[in-house]
Length: 362
Image (cartoon, rainbow, N blue to C red; front, side, top):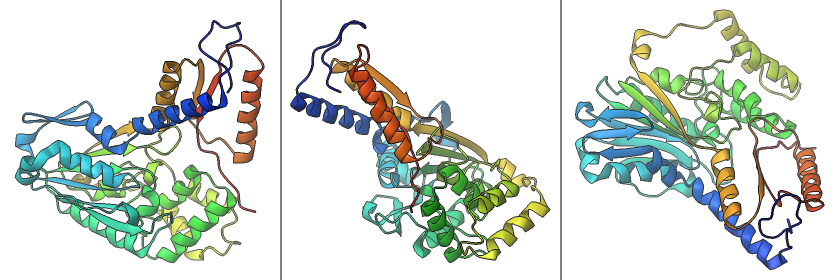
């Protein structure tokens, strides 16, 4: 936008130079990035004060905790894990026998004191891999080995679904890879993709929580899904799945998956699951108390940009989408029309939006 300093609505502001607009735009962008830095978000949500561990609104007595295990997956996993180690400090890392395993992209690997970062997929390739399967099985092993006096921290961020592949029998990694590629090409929303993923996984759709035998499981989640639906972010490994096998079948049929060459095993497994019905949790599963905490999302970044814009003298119009928006072409055209309209009249002079349109390959 080319408008100038704040002015009362109804009065046309002064115009800014192109160089000034460029500098201001970069400053706003950096403010948005800074607001959602993974290490910062973890430190804001997770603190230690004396013998107390504060996680969101939870206050845990460290003296009653025998061991802390840290697991999870996501593109921000390395920074989140490093922040957890920093908050706990060397003494607690040793006292609480802290151990951990996070599936992250290959270019995120760095040495940490107690938490292992596992290269679960190549950089820039958001697809499930055999390395991801191996890492997911190790995560399931770790959480199932814990006891009632233990605390499990689960760190979840964007890309978690592809980084946590654990296909159920008889579904293969190749089956899930074919599904991922087909859905990505035909414009399926993340909600639709994850609805199917959850019904084909040991770890998604609450599978990690069901496997966990700790007394308390706390998930710190950086949301990459509009509206922050806990069951959709990373396909909800710590959230009981509210979707049904019938819903997954509807998605498969909507995108002509059988005609596209998706294995009949996928359809057969989900149909069999529909006939079985939902199973009640076991006593061991009910014994693990689960807390899910969103520590950052799209709105966190968008609102930070809005505050920066105000500081720079703009009157921003700020909008953070809370649901799937449709195709990128239509969204881009709509935003361009809004910007042109704002230039032609007094009022807000800076358009700030965030969301996630979809792309259909042709």
